[in-house]
Length: 493
Image 1 (tube, rainbow, N blue to C red):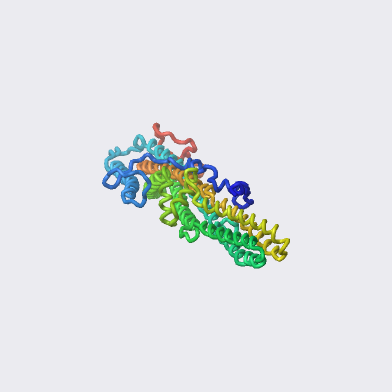
Image 2: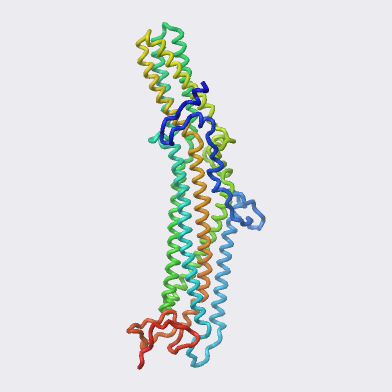
């Protein structure tokens, strides 16, 4: 009978090309190590400490208070950076306003170094624009990683619950059990009544009845996901909901900083004091937002890197708590290697042998009973039809219960989180760092830049235009140490 088990081909179904049932019953290929190899081992080399600066293990444990304090301490470091930046900017501006030497009476030229101040502000804003481009790329990468996670969860849910595509193991089990119970109640009972004159044929019929009852009992234990409170669809919807608002918030932040940089450059080009003053206030707001986003990104990146360094243990414990499934089932699907045996292997093997025995007994009854009892042909044909349908569904069930499909989804989810999402977070962290530095430099330079703007003179024009020359910080008289763009000349009186 074991030879029959090795030669049963699985019918084509939605799970892939034809495979052999014995391959799945005996464990299949080793895919656990390779499926998530690229998603493990990522870790930011940052020390972990609680509020008392005591070392904290770097293993991912978000439910523990010490680990939560370690992540909050990372956020607090960003707050400390914001405070130091504001103090430095305030001290610099106070020194500029209160401690600069008075200009001599009748001085018409700006103080030396004015051009360097303006160009340093422009360079800082250009660096900020570069950081914005990095931020857009990081936001897209993070969104792609989270989308890959959601897609993997939805595909895993499809494997577990897609009844319309015959991909739900529980549906297959219930259908087969109902068919076998119906066969036991009707066809086999009718067959026993027909064959009452031949005791050996009645014994074979009763043997087929016992085998069918055994198959139905074994198959009922395969519906492991039935009644589980955890829904992959709900998790995917929650993740997508949070990601949608996160992505939108970062797009708005990036656009706000881009507008601030562009309008600040426009104010410097037009030498418009009111525009530069408004953009200075906006730069202060964006500076606070940049440091805040930096803290959130750093804490998230540290926590995600700790998770990705060893995800299996945490995922196994969390899934066991949420679903109540046994460790043997969870280890089989999450690890999926030769070291972990299939928890359904015994039930599947017993069911396969029982189905083969029923098939053999029905063929024997057809040879022996039909010539003597023609009325037995109809229940025998009905039983064979039920058996063929049950065997086809059983082969699909064997393929669906194999760990390869669900473990592939698990690996895809880990790669989305630990490769794309983590990489995107690091790019967003770089954006926030560049943004904070560029805006701090601009806030120190802008007050000095607008102090160098010349007063408006309606009599001066350039080809009928009253706009000032771009980035020109000289007064009406030419100054040797400042370079102006030769775009126009003053009209002679």
